[in-house]
Length: 433
Image 1 (tube, helix red, strand yellow):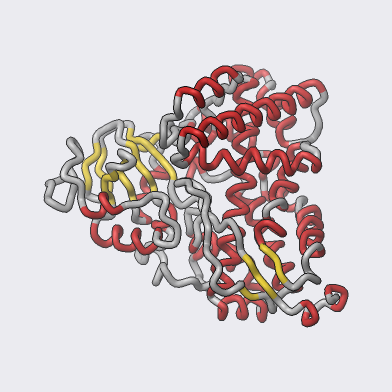
Image 2 (cartoon, rainbow, N blue to C red; image 1 turned 45 degrees about the vertical axis):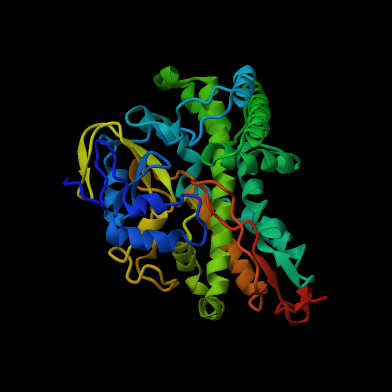
């Protein structure tokens, strides 16, 4: 690669381009506008703020996700900011031992761990969750349907994924509120830039959650059930997997599953309702033809990607998007940008629930590290959308609301989606006041 005034050097990473200087990894509504410019002007650029190379085009991201030998997942859980000494002391003294696990492992150990965990997430097993999910969704809608206004996050989708996941994992429903608070704070600690006071608070939160998880796993070890973690433990304790058994690893997996299985789906659901209701003609099209619901879910995942930015690190010298990268270069892969790339999706910044290749998005990753729980998330989103289309086709966004987002790089979704409707016009008679 030849360095110019607008293109940084791969060795000294200087001069930094105007794209790199203006990059804000915490941007919310401006994220997709910025990435559209980057894909045209400098699709692989260096960010001095993060000390990372940012990759924005669909094909380049696909190359990274498919080539696990050149692009390792080992740095996925590295904190963007080193915690202060007080926060580190809390984590260290509490016995927290987060082990490398599925998200930051590479083959062959990743392959063996994934195989041991995959059984509860097969399409056949996921399908059996539908009656339970529909019951949870209906119960939540029942709670606000006659009111005429709701927050589709706080009143609806904030707890549904947690209720489903906790049933799968053998956690009592009564523990949902406390674990939701644990999990909500983890996003900023792991993927944001909290100040020292926040770091201490979030470190204590991590320590408390680790203690909760440890207690749960110890109960399962003493009295295993048919839940996800009991099945995983049983697989790891088979003679062929005896070298994989480690309680800290199991606790790490439980922490990651409970985090990803809630935070990602809540964010994806919020983005789905925002996209559909902001594009009113698409919502009305969906209400007129509910058979479009599955593709509307895919298009929503593409359009407002709940994990818009993720990480990899090069294991050897390589060339990506015309940029020569040595080994050891940290990459920020902009999945949300790739999902808007016109080269992969015609007019990628347009929201279209009839898009014929919407399911080619990378919202759940790609290849070996594709999200194990994607089938559960899709099912939850589909059922939620089916029920709101049926019972609340006349709901509208509250005009002028501000879109708020958690200040972190890896997980993005609106904190609130406020809607209103005339309850007297509810199409289901039993739903009217």
